[in-house]
Length: 505
Image (cartoon, one colour):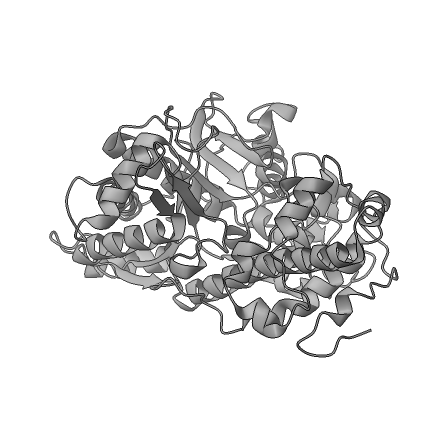
């Protein structure tokens, strides 16, 4: 049943018509839950959903917020057009495609249940059941078949970089020729198209995006307030100036704290409705509801809807930023972020820097045809992956040098796959199926700068935001300078080589 516009009627009648995921609820204390949802508006009108204050007073305990999984917002309901994969026909040898699957895309082998690699005919059948007419021929093998797969020996291949698929030609040869023509000693990046993506949103949207950190060093002391979206935008603006001075053509996916999509927040109400239909199927959640009063149940439904709208808003923002990047037809993309320390806000502790490139999709999501399609696209994009991994390594090294922080040497994230060199050493760059990265069709790197919740760093970053743009030596300026340096080094290697320069580091 659809709701009357502007009311929360749909939250009162949640039909259990949809089967599917049944997330569990555990560790939810009823008293804590009542405190969290006490400010939730009932009825949940469109005006309330559009009011940013709602997202500050209406929240969920962390254990319950796990119900609102990010991938719900990113599920696609219609089949992708697998014919688009034919653009890779004759471009990548089968051994290289299989090696990329094994190393960075599907190390658990889940895709084998859905696709067929016909070795005898040299074809990929991306969905032999639903679209058997779609077949993508592989390129001839430049060397004995299996050499890519044998390079690191069986299961040890996961996460290992290999040699470029086409070492005989530079990356994007036509662009290389254009850039060489435009290059000048004082403008080494002349004509290079770079997209800068300032991660998240700032300003009034920082709290809604859950990237808002507040710390009071002592009772009665002045609060320190840091928002990642403000830091990333300032960093991107400083980086734009540094790259433009070197001749690059810069596009920003956002240049203000506001949301980048044109929709009012209440437009995401239907997504909240679908999500709540899933949640009510969970028996533990039903037990929790029975312990609440009728009014608290309404507030809980409102809190779940508000949280769902936040998630959907984030994914819609990512899609719009990805479209902005695609329109620029970039040579490379840098998505700029700041990290969070794995210890409580306000403590002092070690820092590290990290970068991520697209890869390693969640095996549990490959049931979704769109995820399978994107995974196959990633397996064909071997040279782009090599280029992105190379750029990522250059960036973390430059960030480490400028900021004085070590490169990450251990994996903190279960959904990341650390990239290693041929000797098995971690490079500070992970393959990760981040939403923005997976939407991009260009070498793209997401960088994680200083920890925004480490005590000393919070004070440094607060001072950097207060300083005039371009003030040398702040941690924002040093971060931007590191990224400008790695882009310049990357481009020099690209333009200076007659062969594909993006092999193992």
